[in-house]
Length: 303
Image 1: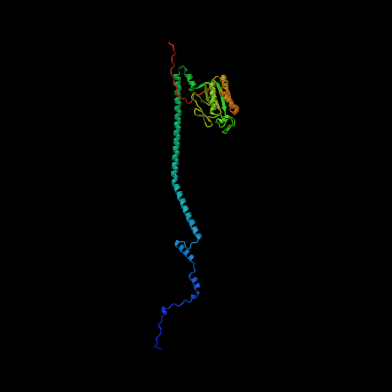
Image 2 (image 1 turned 30 degrees about the horizontal axis):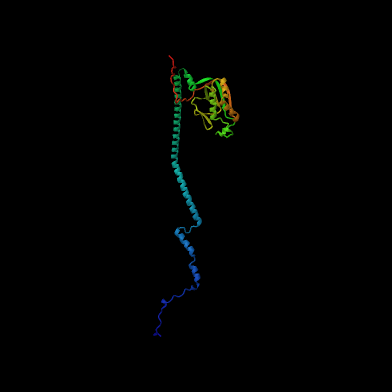
């Protein structure tokens, strides 16, 4: 038996024996792959982003805290810049105020100089009229408004209608461009003054403003201007002349009839009274642009 040959042992090259749990493949797969592939991929992505293991609520709170920190930094920087720039703005504002005040002072000084020069020119013109007018110098100065006058005459008081305002009214005055028919206008005053001149008035003033041959009665809004100086109602018109004839002549003139229509149709108020002694000051500004005084020529045939 010892001489009999035995077959070689080929166990190492044969198929390995089956696992004892080979018959439980499903259970084995569940044990080896306890996490689903989708969850495994999501976990891997979070690990790569560095956010693995943080709940959503904590992430939201961290984001809100970061936003608040950034906002606080912006506000702090803005406040710091405002504190830095505040002195500069205050200095610039004060410099601007100083410039405005200096400009106002300069304008006031210039206005005073203009008024002074205007007075000097008017005085010089009045003296020139007296010197070159000869025997008629006083009369020329009086008619030109270059000297004070006094004498009898009339006082005409004119006022707006009672309760008049800037509201509209009806009638032809509104259609002619008047906003309120109860207010006295510059055109009304022009016609009244012209009526006084035509009736024999020798010297006229409105609210103390002496009228001359060059005086202008204009309007600026609702105000009446005489030589660019505003007047306020009631308007007191003084006219030097024959007090007995001047009043009657004015009422019969075109200007007087016009004023009567204003009273009857639009409520303009007026009153006329004779005055024994009226004093009118010279015109504040008298400018002669064209006329010059000349010596009287001798009459023909005089020796």
